[in-house]
Length: 370
Length: 209
Image 1 (cartoon, rainbow over the protein chains, first blue to last red):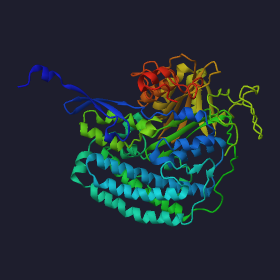
Image 2: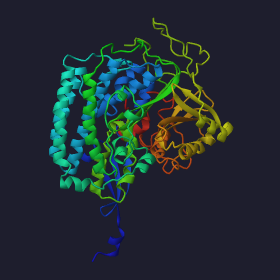
Image 3: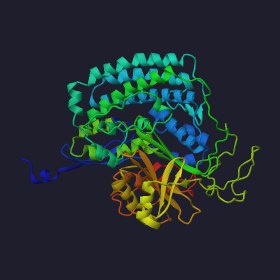
Image 4: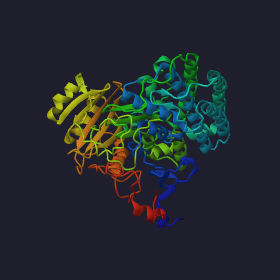
């Protein structure tokens, strides 16, 4: 029979990270435990803090463009799109239709690449080793297209303020269509491996529930809020870059648990293919660069522009003082805000659930810490 | 691309807008040489809607401005009215999602900082910004009671600007180490500046640069 002191010592503090493989980067979570039950968590972040917002104030608008790729580096193109749209808003110019179509294609391709990395690593965390190989195989195809288009695979710097720097290469359309044809059946293959897998369902169903109201309270966005039944997608709500022209659905689910978030993201990949097919079939002819001077100098003012990045609402709040350098750029990172809800999601759950929930948050620490 | 003035280290932040337009042949003039003209201001237009009228009626002279710039609405309010206004917007105007909370430093102004609340309403599909000018050292009330999101966002504002929020449950630095001295996003904090002592003690190197 255990003695009284043993019975008293119920609370245990456990450190998870910053080098834990399932934290997807340098995130440290301090867990307060009662046995294996979680009483509370505290996230320690900032290991990757580079002061992106400070750097912005000391660069010209064009010079800062490549830096944004280094925040959410698995979805660099989305970051670039948001930044370019924000400065274009301040300049009151719009990218030409051709540039917008190419932007949509590349951004959706990047969304697929980002979701694939999430799926692979998430499944790996849960213990399913196979999907990560398949996911990275298909992601490679997407990265090859980026490389062909702009020479870089990860931190692409694909867009410029006002449009595009590079015209599409010969065979770009063919490559995109080939990717779509190749990729769509693969999503079914991943689903065959996971969706009805007993272990997968057992580990994910009912874990880390976040209801729609809680999502609003915590400012959670992206697939997480859509899994809770809220049809919130900025591509539909406040279309940018010509998204209103394309026909696609916003997948939603109702309970808001980890399994639903998985299902939402899987369906999103299919919808991205749909958008890409429509966009690539009708890339308009014309210029790829809008009327933006060599020196970018927005008038005095401020604007907040946000886009639907793979992880949620990615916003840029830019204040211009009329000079060639931004007076202040604030990045509203979806990962940072979403991570805050971790505590609510895992309270009362088990340690193994923390792994599942962090996986489903789909955070990139480069973006959390900036 | 832009063969214009290159950022040269910790540059003096220009005042609100009044920088002279550099001619193409690149004047080697540092910011101090040009006498600041009358500062350009944001060409915002008044924002007239049911909501803005209601806000003005309810808050009177606590709300100093309701404007639109580039199709984006914003409200400028006094510090004491900030939390009641955000709460009013949440409860009675459906702005139930705090997108972002940040600050902007204007060192030459008497009220040095602008606190910026960006709010979104799913029901209206509309965004509004609440800007609250506050003086250095003023402790604004926390908005965690209204929006839970504000917890980390306010911690980041504290971390970067040194604005302490009154009544915040956990007012600590979030991105920088807790013992760090200085607030990096203030304009008087240089781009190469760092907490030398912290770097030497913890990283065991002379300088991080």
